[in-house]
Image (tube, rainbow, N blue to C red; front, side, top):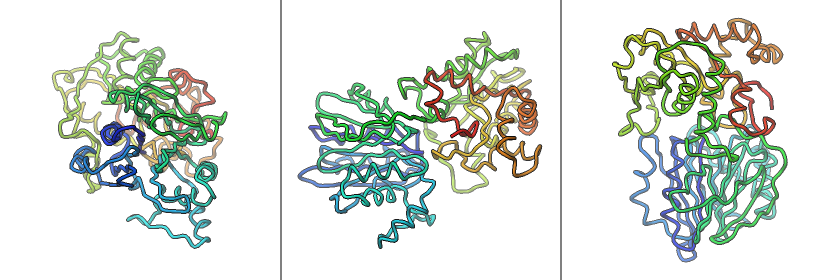
Length: 468
């Protein structure tokens, strides 16, 4: 996953760019970069690894090197960006949030024109470089951006920095957001709306699906009108979005609160306390607690001074151990208690199983698990999002394979996605046994979508029901 921030300002944009980009740090853990343009200084660009340290510590020493009125920055979980490109369109910098399923096909097509690509260390092509090459396939920048949105199978949103202004484009089906803010002397575009609030901006507009705009320090011009069809990812609200973020007019924290309320209305468990796995599970748990009347508690606390982010060590054997080291138990709130624990989701289940075992070892009498979304049955095709793109790593699919054998048909999987079916109950019980929970009950898809509150046909639910 990843996020970006772009700003056009009458003054030097470096301050707003630095902090606006930093506010996207929850969306990526590997690479970060910034690029600026000024009439006197030209383009300036820098990219750093942020695997073992926050964004600010990598760029604070270079802060004074970034001069100019226009700038873009990004936090990425995958590729190094933004990249600087010189082509028949002139020189431009580009950053993307994307998942390109047909990358190899597109690369092969472009290579026929004697174009070359730089391989990353893993042997793959940088997706942002591929998008730049797609843009360069057309005679002008606007047609090139439009072409890239059309041919990418998956998702693609982008910012393009030029000497004339910044171009912003939202994914063709709006799977990821692009939101704009404005103040007296500047205009910005970003992934997370809250990223500009403390910088003095007010909400300006949210781009529609496939919309392309260009903006400078004083105006925004729509170049390609938004389309009608929309499929924004529901997981943005459930897991990835920051509590103060707003997508399609719906605040993340409010959605999670309503989600917890809906879960409690269908439940009848009598636990001593309700707790959320920090951070994304907390608001769900508060909503559940207030609706059910079961007290909210924090039996473990997230230690943030030296664990502000979820970076993982390169030693595979230590990944799961490191993943929950930042959660510190409060034994006095665990011993002898029946705990109802809400997490945003269950993907592989490894960390939640270890957390549950740890709670038992700390004296918990019972551990009831309530994931805030339905079982994940399909690896995400549209975003590098659900922390596992391989369906074979999903614990729900593992249990289904044990029950049905391999090569399970789509029709059978649809039965397992139905919370009213016998197959669904067998799957949930299989997951419960594997992960050693006292009880397990997933949130229903209809309740979760109701908590979002926008039309269901505008929400992507592929990872839960396989529907495009």
